[in-house]
Image (cartoon, rainbow, N blue to C red; front, side, top):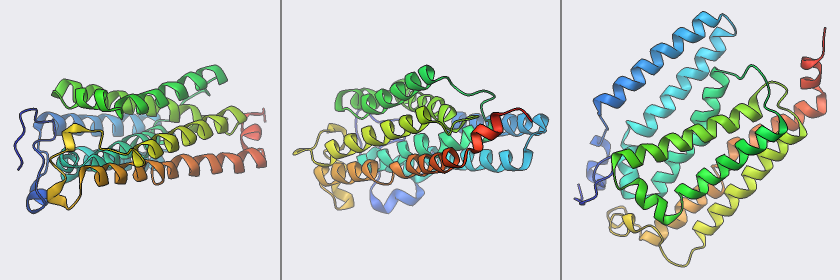
Amino acid sequence: MLERADEPYCGSPPVPAELFTAWNLDPVLITALGIGLTAGLLVIRRSGVDVAARRRWFLACVFVLAVAFLSPLCALSSALFSARVVHHVLLVAVAAPLAVLAFPARSALGARWLGVATLVHILTLWIWHAPQPYAFALSSDAAYWIMELTLMASAVTFWRGVLGPRAATAPALFAHLTVIVQMGLLGALITFAPAPLYAQHFLTTTPFGLTALEDQQLAGLVMWVPALVPYLAAALAGVVRLASGEDARAGSPA
């Protein structure tokens, strides 16, 4: 691996020949995932509500988290900023909504609180993908986990607002649109930046046949297009439900 003084949580940037053996076997993280998996399945079983469907959502969520943190993607994110963006997309746009589907909210967020959740989610994404906060996040394990946990927490809060009961409403659809526009703007700024912005990857992309700027452009494209798909799909589903009056009927007395 390429040695670096400020080695990030996922380890030193690997070279391609080492990538598929670069699994993260952190016993603390593996234990935490195992405890979370056991506890989550127990809570779902005891709830007695939509157990089979919720179990599938939860197992999918844990699998995505394992891919993000235990698979070679974790090590690759030390080398490529584009891999880091893929890692973050898995957290905020895949694992977070899966967690909300597995543990749905009991009541809908009010429009004001949904607005706050949306703003916090957007700010969290922008802050951690700015060069200086990103550098801080890779400066220590503690800083790394602050980044990861705040990204996940803000995403879960947002998705609970837009996937919760009676979520097919105009405020929920506006929240989706706001996130889609802001993530698209962030992706475009990263894609079209005239110079590489993330010093941690200046010397780590060459073994993968990319310059730092090309890696950054790829990261921007990932955030600009694929990252928006889950938000867009949920928004379109909300439009269909809103047009059909499904949530309104679900919320009306029998």
